Length: 320
Image (cartoon, rainbow, N blue to C red; front, side, top):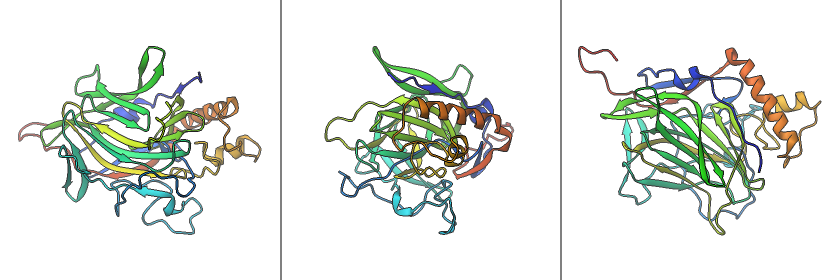
């Protein structure tokens, strides 16, 4: 079994209280915080995901005002900004708050959307979710759950690691603050990106552009199954504010789609990138070195913005 390396994001990254502003900003070292990757042969989609015109967040290589000649920009036909539609689910509701679209999922109910890529392809999936305690997110077998934190009014992200006795849950990052939205306590999670490598059977997790977890075991999909992004609402339900899947890495230039920034990879390897399917010791060593480099350069964090409704105003006479 491959060894999974977990990078714990510094507490200021995930634990810092979020101010009630429409534009939410995260600081992350180098390119971004959670990751994606893939290039798909035509005709391999069992279900074509719907697309919407805009998203509540942007990715570094998929910026709306980006210029076509931008060396970092990726071809827009290699990505899908998914439609946040109920898809016939009476427990999912398309809503808009202060000109921000989102999908509300009832407590204890699930909503799913197909994402790009065949089972063995490499795919990047980025998402922006508001979660209550008990919310779970499944990205084609990559599992994340939101638990109550030991700290009051906070939640803790955990990632699933398949073991001989079932899934083992491990803490990821620092606690995230719960705030009231329509009277319901929810945590506005940072933009997360998952890189699914079906051929190697592993997945990586990024917070913004920062590599957080590497080579986590990815269970094989059942024969004939398609890749799905699924959110199960916790005690207060959940909100999906944005979902983007892509064939290429939307966070940084990554020609071999191995989830490591080409700028760092080429500098460390003397100008020769790793083979596209290199997932052994060489990639693990390079990924660890890149994590350490990002950690060392924390003061140089790039700012991310995301459109989101603010939490409820505090009652008169009370401070937030």
